[in-house]
Image (tube, rainbow, N blue to C red; front, side):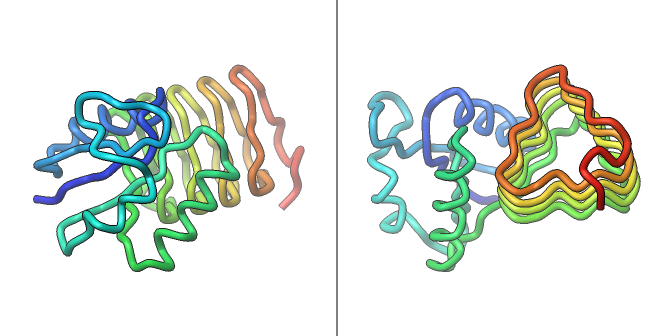
Amino acid sequence: MKRLFILGAGGYGRTIADLASQLGEYYQISFLDDKTTGRNILGTCEEVFRFLDDTTEVYPAFGSGELRMKWLRRLREEGCHVPSLVHPRAYVSPTVKIGTGSMVLPMAVVNTEVTIGEGCIINIGVLVDHGCIIEDGVHLAPGAIVKAENRIPADTKIQSGTIIENRQYPL
């Protein structure tokens, strides 16, 4: 069993904690946050490095793609293990490649031969069709649809309900 420290105790952080608890792989899930105090918040984000050991994973749960990617890079440089998690109620084809620190949330469908970069959020109810490339730091908001053979540029946020037509962002 492992323990998980989540940087950021806001809505996305709580979502990650919920997902992680459902997976049953962690004996401890705690938060570090620079602005919030309370139960399960053990300090500030900068303090994460004093908690590290061989059984610890750290996830930067920031809605801001820029901040999430900044922390992801820093954590990796410091040798931290950053997980990628897939909710048990998501469908992810066995041919999908998922980068470090990316999350696939409930009811998402990620189809054949999709590549998901690092630090991505594939939110609830998202559909990603075959052959797409989702670059680093992308956030596909709830219910977004990305049809076949698109390359979504790094740090892009596709809003809820948006439909990206086939090859709208050519490979």
